[in-house]
Image (cartoon, rainbow, N blue to C red; front, side, top):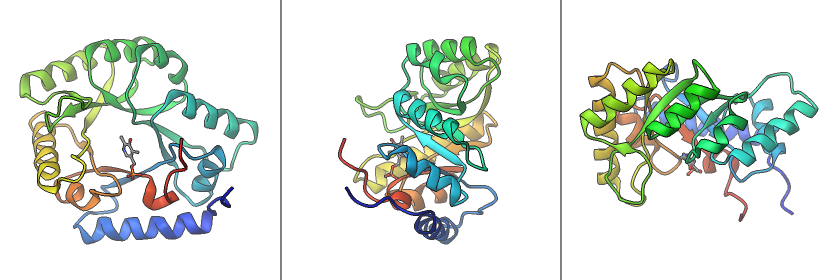
Length: 226
Ligand SMILES: *Cc1c(COP(=O)(O)O)cnc(C)c1O
């Protein structure tokens, strides 16, 4: 097995990521770095915390719960703030509710209902399918659809802080268009945050107004095969 990445290495990688954010015109006080630990073992989440990265992102409920349990067994000096960034299933919301600080992927009413029920007052973002790809998650990006889902969340007492979108792999122009549309929708609804940008499309996201970038590979290296 490859040796685990160290906090020192993660901190150095985080500096590179911050450098990219700044070079793209981002203000580090306005762009939060969410460190995506998905597919890495709990020890990597622990190392990220030791490196000063406290906002941690996970895609799968099971993996997030495994890391939470590991950290609880031997609590580190700083607590993780968990961001859920994967596809949500209503039946997983109950188990996640006590642990997730920010839900990035509310993309339909049933998920809003589940979070409203299990995690009253939670902080959420509405995921929009800004590129319109059929296989992609996210609510339709037309203004009435986005507004309706935001309203639904609010009616349930959820705090909607912004919108989330995923770029189009290998297509910078389509990614930029998707991020621009997402920022426009957020501005139209006076929502401060946009969760946009990963390792591959960080600059485009920052240029188009991202306030939360979700970065895995550049911080932790290639993900181990599942
Ligand atoms: C995996 C993932 C990321 C991080 O991707 P990297 O390319 O490793 O930076 C960000 N957001 C979502 C939704 C992901 O699934």
